[in-house]
Amino acid sequence: MQTEELIGRLAAELRPVRRLGPPVRQATLWLALAAAAMVLAVAHYGFRHDLAARMHLPYEVAQWLASVATGILAAVAAAMLARPDRSWRWALLPVPALAAWVASLGLGCFADLARMGPAALAMGTSWGCLRFIMMLGLPLTAALLVLLRHAGPVRPVPVLLLGSLASAALCSAGLSLLHHLDAALMVLLWHGGAALLLVVLGWLLGRPLLARPPRHP
Amino acid sequence: MAAAQAGDAAAYNALLRAILPLLRNIARRRIANPAEAEDAVQDALLTIHRLRHTYDPARPIRPWLVAITERRAVDRLRRQGRRAGRESSIEEHGETLAAPAANTGEARVAAAELRAAVAELPQAQQTALALAKLEDLPLAEASARSGMSVGALKVATHRAVRALRRRLRVED
Image (cartoon, rainbow over all chains, first blue to last red; front, top):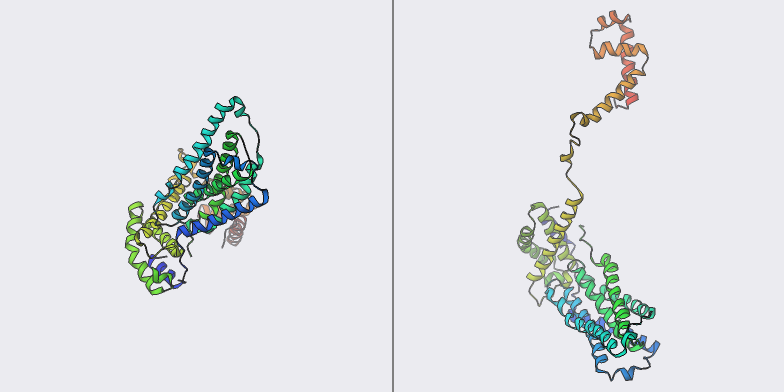
C-alpha cells in the first residue's frame, strides 16, 4: 500500500478520542489505589506488635521512607515515560531513592553483624513475605500497566520495569508495617528478593501486553 | 492535531501529509534501504494514529512525532537484523555441492524414473517407442526393421506414450 493511500484510510476512519489526563494525575490515581490496598491489608492483618518502638528508630524510619519514596517516584517516572514526548531522563527519578533504600538494607546487615555477631547471619525462611509481595504486587503492577498501556508502542520495557519496581517498593513498605523481621539480612533477602522477582515477573508477563508491533489494517 | 483528536478528518489528513517529509527524513537517516524506510514511515503513521489520544496540545508536537518515528525505525532495523540472521537468499545455494555431477540430481532421478517406466511396457510397445520416437525413423523403415505393420506401430507408439503419461502423472 502506498503511504499516501494509508493516510487517506487513517483519516477516513478517524474517530474522536478523549485526551489522556496529565501523567502525574495517572500516577496519583494509581498511588491512591496502592494506598487503599495497603490500608485494607493493615485492616486485615493489623499493625505489627513492635511498630511503635520501631518508629522511634530513625534508621528504620529512614529505610521505610526510602522504600515509599522509591515507590512513588517510580510510579511517576513510569507515567512520564509512557508518553512518547517525555525525556528518557525521567527514568532516573527513582534512582536516588532506590539507591538509598538498597543501601540502607545492606548497611542494616552490617550493623546487625556488628551488634549481634554471627547470629545476624542466621537464615530463616519467610515465605509469607514473598507471598504477600506477590499477591499484592502482581495485581498492582497489572493495574499500573493497564493504566499506562499507551506506553506499549513506544517505550514498553522501561515502563514495565519502573511499574514493577513501584509496586514492589510500596508492597515492601506496606509489609514493613505488618510483619516484623528482626534481622536486616532477612529483610534484604525476602523483601529485596521478592521485589526483584516481582520486577522480573512484571517484565516477563507484561511484555506480551505492552510490546506488540503495530498492525497494518 | 487537537482538531484531529476532536474527530476532524480533513485537519487530520492535512496534518499527516504535512508531517510526512519529517517522518521520511527520520526513517531514511536510520534505514538505508528505501523500501524498509518507507515501511517504517507507515508503521509510524499507524502508531501516531493509535496513540493520538496521548498527545497533549499544550506541548510542541515535533518531539512527540520524532520519538514515535525513531522508535518504529529502530524496530524495523531490529526485525530486519533478526530476519537476516535467520534467512539467507536462495540464489546463493543453486549449487549446493562442489562436484558438478552432484547438482544434476533432479534430472538424473527423472531419467531413472522414465527408464523404469519404459522397462515395464510390453515388448512391442518398447520396440515401437524406440524406433519411432527415440531414433525418429520414418514409419516405413521402422516397420521394416521391427517386422510390425505400420498400423500396429502407430497403435503401439500411441499406447506406449499414453501408458507413460499415466505412469508419470503428466497432464495432457
